[in-house]
Image (cartoon, rainbow, N blue to C red; front, side):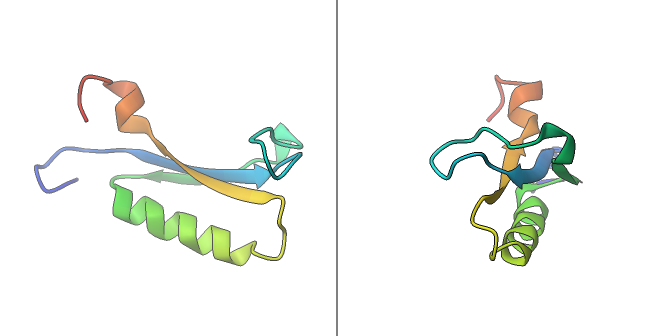
Length: 76
């Protein structure tokens, strides 16, 4: 929950990209679904841990998706 008591869901996932300048994944069946988190701070911590753990693979990228914005686009 955020400070206002709202649930702001965030998805963290990643995978190996085909090219460094794009966001097309090499193999969708191998995406790493890290999890769904109740706020940005916990999602960012999970993203950072995964990104740092895969720093030796330049093709590997992790992303944070603001699910709450997709579920209710009228709420920031």
